[in-house]
Image 1: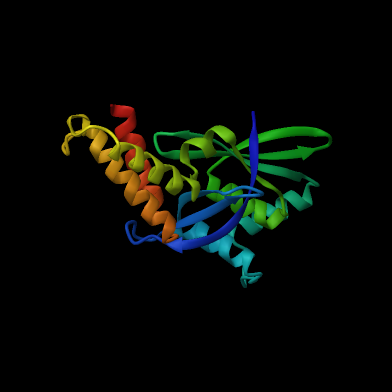
Image 2: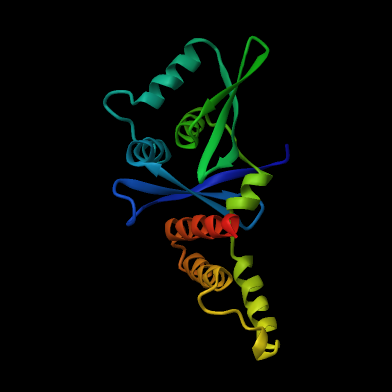
Length: 199
């Protein structure tokens, strides 16, 4: 499975989902970004570690780190490897006594563990291709729109068609990327995927 390494770009609140946050991952050495909507508790756990703030009592992910250390387990990597029905899936890859284990996890929990263990985070190329967003999409969209203006008027797509709605959403997606509103971009991307799969 081809994979790309990512790092955490940041966290932003989600105006559309109460208590939810958008975790933004960016491709190391690339231009793609991957927004993932996560819960408030997991966002707090990740943010505390990124800011090097020590809580008075250990959080769940701190407890996991303590267990990992106590049993000499090595977290070699975290991998976001699947996207099904707009839900991301991840695995925590561990090694103990020379034996490797893959443990199923939510991406938010896996990343909260990864930042505590200073483990690399990867996303499969398939997931990044499907859900990642890039500034280059704006240039591509502008090129498509320019080509479309050269076509005869009778080839225009009716405004009520799914194709027109997808084109409109792509334009909104590009605008959200330009404004770095990645949570909105993720919502629009999911709507495009839904319409595309139904067409």
